[in-house]
Image (cartoon, rainbow, N blue to C red; front, top):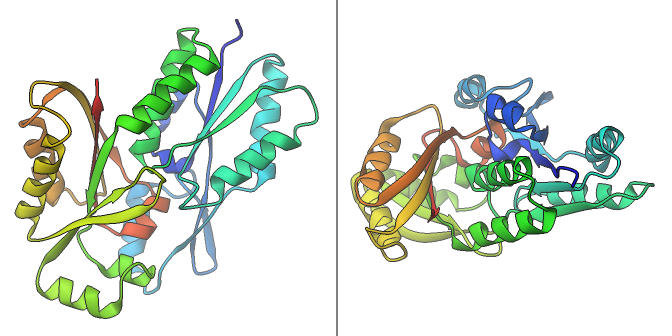
Length: 285
């Protein structure tokens, strides 16, 4: 059986060394600061991005890859392995047209090709954990259908919550009104957000102060995962560690964590949530 090849986009926030080790192909989105355009995680790394974000007076924008960008990767993989299946796993279709670009590209290949495009309905390590699991299974010789079944299970069983340090970027992006952002900042209101089963960002709760917000996240996770159940937990945060370390400590000390990882939120995701954001993703091990 020919090994399944795994493709993703830059919003999966998988470190380059892991992508290289597992043979994961990555197609970058673009980040634009005014007229300056950068390739996410290639010509603009996370550390540089957050410095630019704080200094920039406007709101950076993002741009999806074109179908041609995906076609170039698919064609190269097919040249290397004409009979090899391809599994392409991407950012929620509710956030970006990236998934649609990949899907369109898969239909434009003019030769026999076995390409499946998968909507993660998530972002950052919510995608990355699916991609890494898929690549590990592919390396072990699993079929495309078996890999799809496994990542569908993981997607359905994952709980995720995230906190933003400031409401400014949600307000600039049009997700909340200016008055709500001002009041929230004055009262130190911390909105707890999630991504629902359709891949849409929705508010879960609003708590005053980071400590209470972190405890509320732990309490909500406890509703889904008994303390003795083996779980894997993944954290994603920006370059500001503050409440991120507090959340990591609170979660890892409250559950039977069998596997854990930490990912830096990349430029595309960071452009929409701002510095100081922290997220936790948990699923059964």
